[in-house]
Image 1 (cartoon, rainbow, N blue to C red):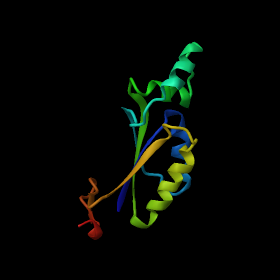
Image 2 (cartoon, rainbow, N blue to C red):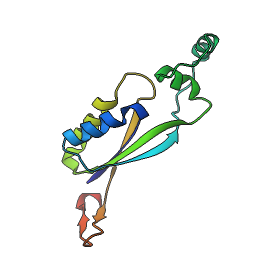
Image 3 (spheres, rainbow, N blue to C red):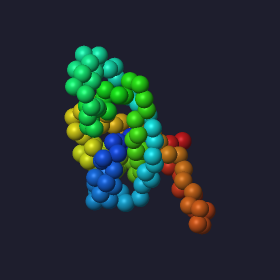
Image 4 (cartoon, one colour):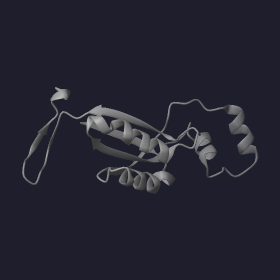
Length: 129
């Protein structure tokens, strides 16, 4: 089993939920998070936009302000069988890719075991040990 974690833009939450459900991943968790990427800020771009007045509410506005503040994002996590990781990752990419900085990031990590609270059933992923 693998945990697929994705940080995505606020305005892509519904598209991500729908895409995951349609792709066969109806069970996931979504949380509110704040963060920022590591990309450098283009000083010329900042000066140009700020000289025009109001900061746009867009990926460009997000890019410009990212150097000085945390950006609200959504954090999705979904646990999938090893053979469905690529499908889950591609589903998230297709639902979130705009081609602009700040589209998000996906991480994939192994899950060694899971325990169902209702009945205590233990599921062990022997490949993770």
